[in-house]
Picture (cartoon, rainbow, N blue to C red):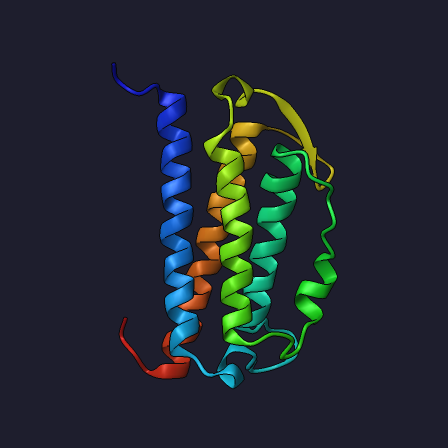
Length: 156
């Protein structure tokens, strides 16, 4: 029996989030703590802020919005942090958050994909929420990779 479009979408989303997280973890391993928290000016986000932001976003949309856990996100704190966590702490937070989110997606009944939910004041379907998270995660992963290349001079 071939997988349904719905199962394919959820599986691809899970696999994409895992791949993107592995790229972020690789970047964190290449950077010093100073580089993780470096910024050219106060209007830019450091890699550390982006990791905290991704954890907050994934928690709010998937763990809370789809999974039903309480929404405890403090978005402003994600961007206000300055040298708040070490590289291993950031990597562990990302791994922990993604693990919880992937468990929600792994156990998601496909019949819920069309269900409406409200996250950040927006009404979306569960499918749209998953798509929003994967797209958002991808965009910030690109920023983290670019910042890592700037800091380290590495091509990859």
